[in-house]
Length: 186
Image 1 (tube, one colour):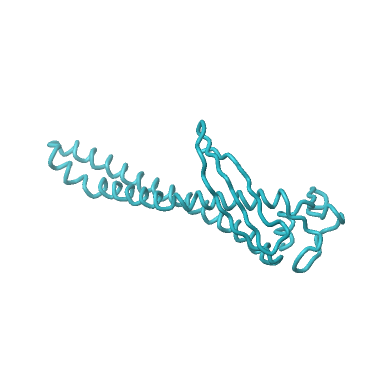
Image 2: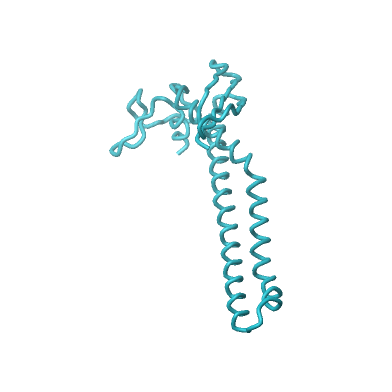
């Protein structure tokens, strides 16, 4: 339902089990076609916009590190699987010991390969979900003709918490600029 994207950013929605999503002003289900004439974009909108953009920035900053970790783990896994025969033949004299070592090394290599893939897959799922959430918000704002530029600046880290200052400049909207300091756990 397209209206829920608008209502998720508005200050007026009401949700309950009996009626589902309704407008807090009209007590009716949303029935607008393109834009809502009564939409109020304020704190909920600002918070969602900042959270989505901050999460996306944090994930984008981790992309290269995640891929390097993936490639390193893949290399280690394949080395264990392929290189164990050479090492076992040189160091172990009994064939029973050699086969136990080889089986253990192959098992460890396969485990590392599975771990590397699942770790990268979880990261890519988070990144895709974050990009999708941002595109939903941006598509709603586009319908209202609102454009924005967001500057996220990391400040000092205190007791494991990262201070962040988010400055948002809006174009084609009455709210021209907001600055929000926030703290994220690292």
